[in-house]
Length: 189
Ligand code: CO
Image (tube, rainbow, N blue to C red; front, side, top):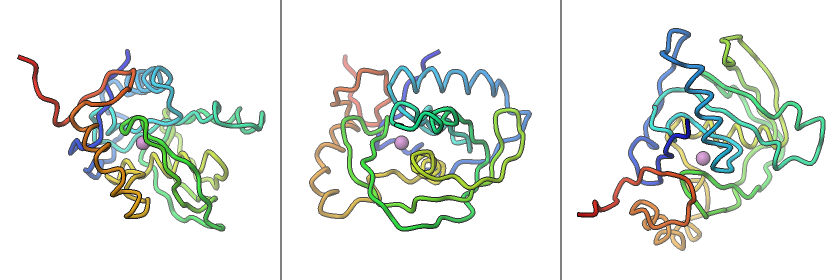
C-alpha cells in the first residue's frame, strides 16, 4: 500500500523518534508499504516519520544513483534503532533531495564514512562501517529520526533564498506526483 508522505513544516518531522522492539505491530507490513511508497515516489531512502510514525526505522535503496554494480547489490537495507557511533574522512558535498521537500535539491556537506550499529528487519544485530553513497543516504535518513532535515544543513543565504518555496510546500503548492500530507493546506469547502 502506498502511504502519503508528510510534507515539510509538519511537526512530526521535527520530533525525536522512539526505539521499537520485535513486538511492534505489523512491522513487516509497514516495511513493505514503506518500500512501495519509496519506489513509487522515486526516492532512495524513506524514514518512518515521513509516513507519520515517530519510530526509529528507515529504509534505503540507493541503487538507482549508483554506478558500481557491486555496490548496487548491497543497496537495499532496513535500519531499526540505528546509532551512528562515529563518522570519519574528509567532508564532501553531495546534492541531496527529500521526498518531504519535493523539487528542492541542495549540496550538503558530510563525512564519507560512518560506523553504525543497527538491527535489520528480522532484528538481527549489525555493527558496520559503511561508505560511499550508502553512507550518504543513511546519514540523511538518520537525521530524520533526530528531527533534522537536509535544508537545516545548508548555508543561511541559500536557506533564505528557499524560504518562499519551503513555505509553499507547507501549503501544498508543489509539483509532487505522489500523495502528501501538508501541514498548512486550506480545506476546500
Ligand atoms: Co529525507
